Length: 453
Ligand code: UD1
Ligand code: CA
Image (cartoon, rainbow, N blue to C red; front, top):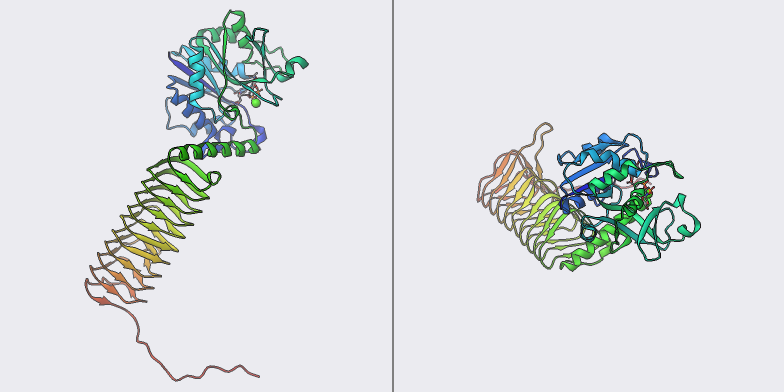
């Protein structure tokens, strides 16, 4: 069965009080609408139509990398029925149409698959039973329990208002029938809108049985109208991710204090302490341990790596058996080949640190190639920038750089070279030799000044 998905996203989202269209606000670093589109993709929808209104161009621009999406403008928001009507010409092949909302981001493909399977080529409705159904359209059933119609809150009588089963807005219908039903909608109701919900009564009048499904959790059907709801759905989403991670074998010291914004892959026996943010594409190998308060953004971490507390790592690769932190910063292009040791207050940018090399304290290494078994002493700085251009520092295998050395690039340190502490190295230092630029130490007789009375 071929499925077309219509995503309604034309609402203004006034209550967000934002210059940005509502559906571009993010949950887990992804626009609300992106979540819904991804869900439609997980259903192998053949056609996906997004109905946009307010801030349309901005919304479209956010999804240019998905050229197969179809965009339909609803210039005036005359109701959900009117919105779907605008989308219909953009659907050409689908036998069945699934209507989703662009501001309901936590809906799960499993739930929709169940709805689709239950409805088949008929009419499917996703409903939820709430303790407080206020504001929603109510699902009205007859004595036999068959769904008859949906009545909006503002059109409902007291008896209907007491109904706790509500319409989530998510419906699944045969395309040709839907087309016909939409043609029969009127806006003669309390809100003067064309209600999509009215097609349900038309389907019933046509003799269709309405198949109803409910999601495992009501949160799946919750929409975002203000920033409070945005935060509460973010929280629910993170909770869901954390649960999935734990069930997949990851130890989370506090599942309420991890945030994943992007794609995380992991090996076995990974342990993550509290307050960790994983953003973009993060790959964690087997037995990786991440200490408290770390941020990893687009980072690949190989097996048996330990990242200690308070590290910020970005666009970097950490080879197997390395230890990083606490308080280390890896900037874009940092590559630790393996068994490296990067300690506190060390910043590494666009540099390769060879196997088993150590940069343990208070250093800046930029635009550098560091060989294997190198020891870089505390306070060593690569002076990679002359104010106009960046230059490279090459440190060969087994070199030992004494503490507080400035390496003025471009410069090379040969294999096995030793650099004396406090040196300013602006010319290449040969291998296996001690190079130093220290001035001679002197001791003089001297009287300390005495404080005047
Ligand atoms: C709608 C349903 C209601 C249901 C509720 C669930 C109708 C008539 N009512 O009510 O039964 O309980 O959703 O949240 O369908 N939109 C457009 N164009 C429009 C109007 C809306 O694209 O002209 C989009 C909105 O951006 C939003 C979605 O449709 O994503 C729902 O609109 P909203 O105004 O929230 O619907 P409700 O009136 O709350
Ligand atoms: Ca609503």
